[in-house]
Amino acid sequence: MAHRRGLLIMLSSPSGAGKSTLANRLRQWDPSIQFSVSATTRAARSGETNGVEYYFHSREEFTAMINEGAFLEHAEVFGNFYGSPKGPVLAALDEGEDVLFDIDWQGGQQVRNSLRAEDVVSVFVLPPSIAELEKRLTGRGQDTPEIIKGRMQRSRDEISHWAEYDYVLVNNDIDRAEAELRAIVTAERLKRSRQPGLIDRVRALNVEFEERT
Image 1: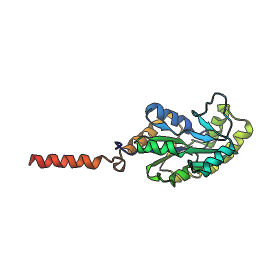
Image 2 (image 1 turned 30 degrees about the horizontal axis):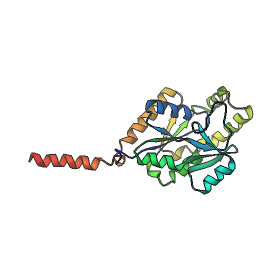
Image 3 (image 1 turned 120 degrees about the vertical axis):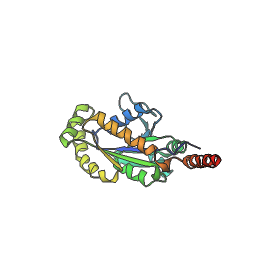
Image 4 (image 1 turned 90 degrees about the vertical axis):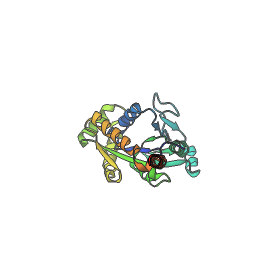
């Protein structure tokens, strides 16, 4: 039996608010946290490797996987499909391993309604301001002005879903936001409901009491 039930840690934010940076830092803090590698129909960018950043599929392949029930969640974003393969995630949780999702609110809703909803810890990351959000998107130098404009338009809708999450962080300082995220994960790991061995431990303590009388 696993020493505890694994967490399904779900990070969401509008593009540019810092969820990917926080996800990377969380895994550097605890390398045992597994990252759920998403599948997508978008083309690989320079330097990306299949199975590392994403699993890259054609739309036909992705649609077939949806029909097979292979995803824990999936959504279409900016004309491309994204989804989280179900098998590796469920296997990791059953072994008591934590799995990290860098996911949008649409996928988040599906995960919260999934068969493992009780293991979800959801965190939404807000930017300190909309001006700062646009500055970050522009500073990355990854997208055209048209794509940045689309991301900014979408961000308002994404932010409107903040209240659906267990925790909300304001990323005006990445080090502070990271410390807060670590604290959330630590506290969630210690919840009584996630420690199946506690009953046996308390029983053993009671046996010790009886032996002393």
